[in-house]
Image (cartoon, rainbow, N blue to C red; front, side):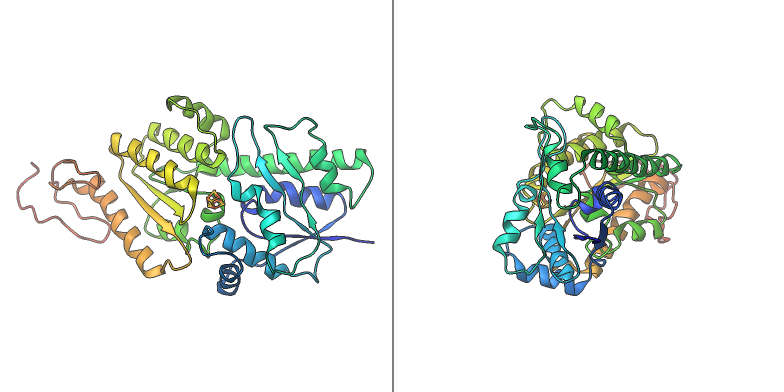
Length: 339
Ligand code: SF4
């Protein structure tokens, strides 16, 4: 019999899809992924959970509903507690299987391994929980896991190589993978920035080794993995030549973002790097987003090309006028020679 397992295209999917899809496919299981996020999926998610839940979890519920219970034999929803030593994933990831069981959404039986690197006594338990419905052979499970890890490694290296190819790094877009790589949720922010002439880099394009090394610049240990990723990426970006600005993409209702973003903004202010904080929820409109990023990109270009006698977003004098225009052809009103 051939088995089919459902993977909702949300949350951990955007970071670990190569790992889990390769693992299940190596076991001979067909992987069914929900469609790209769209209005119907988002609306269904919003209807399925309490209002206070963050946007990414609402989106996740919408994807589970989109998979339904007829197409698949199982639904994969790991209980992600920790993926590295001394750091945790957000509590909502830990509680996902319970939230799902308490909801009215119809879904296939869950495969819900506990992934906890902090407490893991026997690292093989979660592998067995994932694979035992499909095979009882350890050799097959271990081979599938090796292939899956290699595929994930290849994917991560590809992202980093892509970043190395960028010659003029100017905008770091910070956010969780599921906000950055879901084009519907972020209203195609990365493409819009590229269309405005920006080179864009995301935290996943900076290697984990580099992010972790940069975190040593921070006086305290951050124990949330997503917080570590964002702060490490900022420190790394601040060392780079050609850095121009940072966009912080957060989710309304995210506890981690609420304090990590503040730490990041303080560091950026200290280093005089302009930033824009965009908080996403299900009501965020595309028109407002475009206006804000265009204004922000104008500021970035003015700082680079014009240096008019103005105050920057962080409230300090930034330079003098050379009479050049910003990207939208706007010149400052100063009539004097550079001063
Ligand atoms: S880290 Fe924030 S955005 Fe992500 S699931 Fe947790 S609360 Fe939601």
